[in-house]
Image (spheres, rainbow, N blue to C red):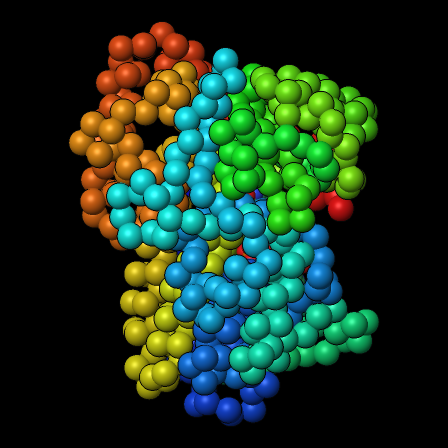
Length: 472
Ligand SMILES: Cc1cc2nc3c(=O)[nH]c(=O)nc-3n(C[C@H](O)[C@H](O)[C@H](O)COP(=O)(O)OP(=O)(O)OC[C@H]3O[C@@H](n4cnc5c(N)ncnc54)[C@H](O)[C@@H]3O)c2cc1C
């Protein structure tokens, strides 16, 4: 698997390239000439979560966000496995107050009929619900929550560069226009798709197994699915050039986006974003039926240069979380959960490393290795499904799920985000792969055709083209 294969073998190299012999592998004692114990770059859900967790443990944390909340962000559908993390940081009731209940996901068949994977059928211990959210609201809430826990959370503060020295890290910051430096004992990179540290250390690699880009907007007066009168389900439609999401939002509007293959995006040739999204939605089976009265109420945004991972996610006195390390196509709405899950476990690494300066760097290395392995395993479990999502075999398995040996319940658990610990779930996911392999053998020609098509798409470079990446 791409993410795993490229991971551990790079660990030693970059570890060595960042090692400062003068430091003798030890952290400075707490407070020694330092502005903070921990500097967190990026005030999205990952950064705010780890900042809160570390502050809850008594660490002095500075959290720097280059924008100002509330600001738009994509990623509006959360997973049940994320709920215990909101609870752990004391923000679940705040989320409940602003979120719209999400009870499951459906993946409509070509004829428009569909089967809803309801979270209450999950095999593991995940809650039977989650929320759809306006990201500007929850990101602002989590940032303010961090501040309430004593984090020095600053907006309009962009980290421009970092240097690792004898006793920690020094960051150059453009703080609301003024140049400053800030020194901390540990650095957490939660800069999202900017991949701040990954770019500085030249660790970012585009995925060789999956490429696509997304166009999206908000609409009003979109009909819910017929079997979902309350608007509590995310619908994911496949179409010839990719897939599309319909997410009912808390304010009654609907987020709609199309994630497209590179070859299709290259055909765009100068069409403006709004026309191209409308033209693409016209190809999504049954989307028109839900959009007869729909009106677009936002600009059309684009995210290009899609899937990537950094070859390494941590080193001496630094760690990456969430999108700062890797980005997976959001078919299963996994991003916010993965960044908050990595924040939860990275907090253990950072706190554990700082707790015993005399026993460094062995302790830090051991903690980081465990963290890195955990995250790579979890991402790889989602990635396996994502890469094959549009294949004929996967299509038929999702269209007609059968609960033989509770495999369908295991798939619901995966859709709920339960991909890390529960052995019952992991066994069912392995069984699903076995069923997929048999299905592929039985339908070998179509399986091979799909594999060739995926490989051709992945070779197609789409770097945004004439579509401005991440335009707001
Ligand atoms: C098209 C699309 C659809 C998606 N749909 C979903 C979905 O339905 N559900 C889901 O869970 N996820 C979804 N995601 C993924 C989700 O958006 C991300 O995984 C999630 O936002 C990652 O959180 P983060 O905290 O790691 O990064 P971000 O949320 O991106 O936060 C990073 C922050 O760092 C700040 N920053 C960057 N550089 C600097 C710097 N140098 N100095 C200071 N601050 C800086 C940025 O301004 C930003 O606020 C989707 C993503 C895309 C592209």
